[in-house]
Amino acid sequence: MMRGARSDITKAVGDTPIVKLNRVTEGLESDIYVKCEYLNPGGSHKDRVALNMIRDAEANGLRPGGTIVEATSGNTGAALAMVAAIRGYKCVFVMPDKMSQEKIATLRAYGARVVVCPTAVEPDDPRSYYQVAKRIADETPNCFYANQYHNPSNPEAHVRSTGPEIWAQCGDELDVFVAGMGTGGTLSGIGKFLKERKPEIKMVGVDPVGSLYYDYVKTQRITKPFAYKVEGIGEDFFPSTMNLKIIDEIIRVDDKECFLMTRDLVRLEGLFVGGSGGAAVAGAIKYARQSGKKENILVLLPDGASKYISKIFNDDWMRENGFLEEDKGLGTVRDLL
Ligand code: PMP
Image (cartoon, rainbow, N blue to C red; front, side):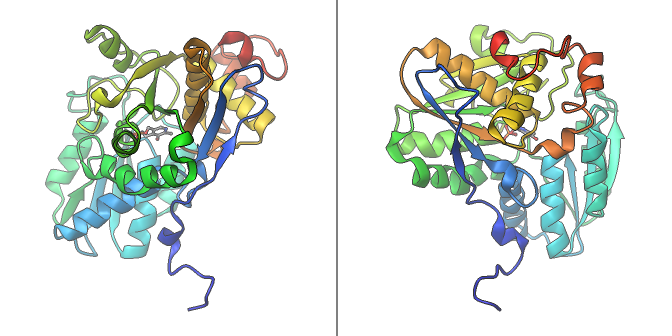
C-alpha cells in the first residue's frame, strides 16, 4: 500500500477541524468555536457511532452477509451504509416522512432499502418508525438492530473518539461544550470524557421547541411534544442513550432561529452546515449572552448543508413556512436571538 494512503474510507473518520466563528458572534464577550463533524466521510458525527456500533456488534457475533436494520433520520443510516458497503452487510432503514428527499435518496444511493413511515403518530403506534424498525428486525434472520436510541455503543463512540479528540485540540482552555440533543449520544459521551478531565466544563444541550427535553429538564414535567421542522434533534420520548444528569444548562431554539442561523453560518462564515448545526450555534449564542462571562465555547456541527438545499436554502420553502417573512438580507438572525 502507498505510504500516504488509508486502507479504506473508515480510516478517514474523525480528526475533524475546530474553527473559530468571527462574524455571527460579533459583539459577544466569549469566543465561540465549532467542531466540523460534517466533514466526516459519511457526512456527519454519526460515522464515529456507526463504526463503534458495528465493531461492537461484530465482537458479539455479527458476520458479513448479515442485515443491519435501523430507525434513522438519515445520518446514522448513511454512516452505517458506508461501513456496511466495505464490510459486506445489507441495510434496511426506517425513516419518518418529514425527512428530506435528499436523505432518503442518499441512503438508496448506498444500496440500502428505505421504508418511510408517518411522522405524526405516537412512538408506540405500530406505524411509527421505531415500531416498524423493531418489527423488521424481529422478522429478519441474521440481523443486527443498531437501535441507536438504546445502544450504549452510541455514547461510547464519543467517549472513545470525539471526546479525546476535543481534549487533544482544546485541553483545559475549553470552558463550555454545546450540542443539539437527539439520542444524546454526543452530549452524554463527550460530557463523560471531558468532565473526567475537567469537572468544571459546562455541558449545554440545545433543544428545539416542540421536543420534550426542555420542559422536562426545567420543570420535571412531561409535556405533549409537537411537530417542528429542524431535523435530527429533539425527541418525543426519552432514549436511554441520553444522560440528562450530565447537562448543566439547556437552551431552547425555534425553527426560525435554527434556519436563519444555518443560512448565516454558510453566508457569513463559509461553513456549509445543516439545520441542527444552526440550532446548536443559535443556542450557544443565547447561552453566551445569558452567561455574562468570558468563556471558550465549543459547538458541535453535526452534518452538512447539501441535504437541506431544497428546504433551508430554498427561499420559497422558507417563506411558505413563515421563516423568511421579508428579505432583510444577511445577518437577520442576530435580531431574533
Ligand atoms: N444533528 C443531526 C443532523 C442528527 O442527525 C443528529 C442525530 N439524531 C443530531 C444532531 C443529534 O446527535 P445525537 O443523536 O448524538 O444527540
